[in-house]
Each structure stands twice: as C-alpha cells, then as structure tokens.
Image 1: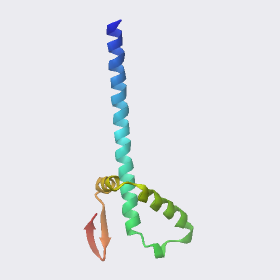
Image 2: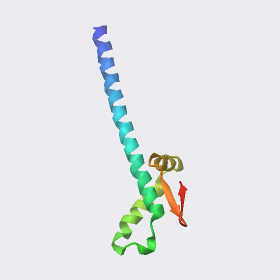
Image 3: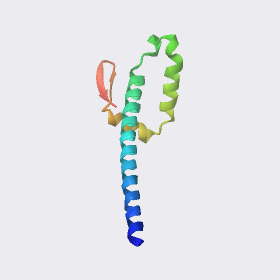
Image 4: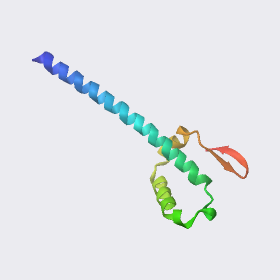
Amino acid sequence: MPHEIIQLKDEEITMLRKELELLMGERELLLRIAGAAAAFVAELDTSKLPPETYEAAELLAEFLNETTEETLREALEAVKAHIVADGEEQRV
C-alpha cells in the first residue's frame, strides 16, 4: 500500500510539473502579446485612428493601464520593444 501511495504522489507531481510548464509557456505568450500591444499603442497616432476603431483601442488601452508596471516591463522586454520617437529609435 505505501508503495502505491508513493507512486500516486509521483504521478501527481509529474502532472503538476506538466501543468506548470504549460502555464509558464502561456504566460510567456501572453507577455509577448501584451508587449506587442503596448508597443503598438505607444506608436499609434490617435489623430489618424478611424472612428470605428475607437472602442477597441480604448478597451486595449484600459487593459494595458490595468497591468502592473512590473508585468508591463516584462511584456515589453519579451518583445524587445523599441519605440520610434521624433525619428529616433528608443528602446522601451
């Protein structure tokens, strides 16, 4: 019986490791998406934004603003974001 319990625990640990690896992979993907979105918003010229896109842009900006500074920094780093300001490239 104790051997069976140990085997079950080992299986649970293996399953948890796999799930953790999946979650970490998803987190990395979500960080890249957020970083790309933040870089996009930073480069966006709102005066040229079509009116039918205002709602989507506002929603995206709201979610980005809810992101913690640390997470946003990680997201920008995940995409190695660069923002072009005044004709000069600046690393974000």
